[in-house]
Image (cartoon, rainbow, N blue to C red; front, side, top):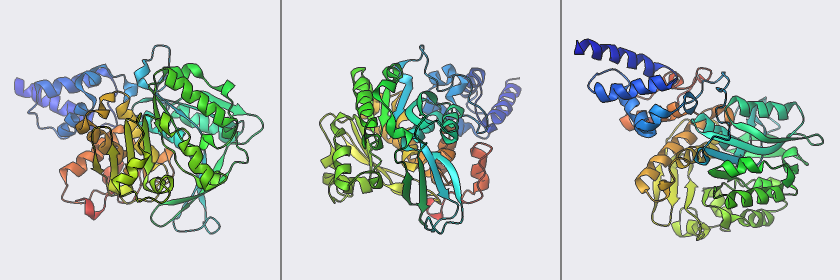
Length: 443
């Protein structure tokens, strides 16, 4: 009889794990009970299930609503998913402040803007990308910013709502358009930008338009530097930071340097560093380290540490496919990345930040626990890597299950290279690219 029960549970769990998501508390509870009572049932996917449970924690799995897990693309987010309510705990919410725009990405790499045969329209803007990344990973996020009262602006707000991001902090401007950016893709997937914002609506957000109640609910307040370029948005940015700080919120800063938007390189450096000492967590790229240290070598830890300030809790340096480096008051190190067939790096850094914040928001002990921090950063590296395998930022952001499956595959060191046909089964149904994600160097 016990053998029949085990067989029944094994088949049930196999079907559950092969579905695109865990749909309810009942299934979470069943999964937990199966692992506890029938650990020896050899159904496929059980090791992956244990990996996911270990990542969430047993108690989290039992108590998690369905909205905590990733959403199927093409389906509207469950009501209330990602939306901050009066009953939400402060520790659940990440508020992202800044710009959202339309990226026009060439359909073929290696062409100049003038020579590109066609472009793909994609929603973007670093803070908005981070907000969506967090929601796609099962977290709670909100976005504060301003859009044009035009078709693009309302489309962008709809995209945030569709992906479960609280958009109640968005304002619309009757007199300015939503920002646009044309992106040039080199053969290696790296980018160059040309912006249309003279001015765009995001630059015209006023302090009086801020949703201070939403900011006060946040556990983490995330921002970039583009909103510091001009008034009135700069004053709104500073006021939002001050309100977040006063409410005990962690401040997360990704400068996201875009020199063409600043009057000069010196003005950019000065503006970016003007709020540096306010941040609790800072993420920079190698190019940004070189720029902010006036030509310093980002491979040199002493150079990177020039960006450290006494109140900082975590400094992160992303290194593309090589992974990232981390620095805290007590320790520092490097976490390796994932080598993938990158076609567009747009949004990869934002996916990385979203991965970090999604882990940090529920476990601030990462600042003191190096082992757990390294796990969180490996998760974030996988988020960034997956995002480079598709064009555009928000359309390429992965869900949590996809990220964990990629980590599991690489940890298992499969004897053959997984193809996109395999990995498309891990992703949400509407995303089925036809090229390989992993290179021969990964196995």
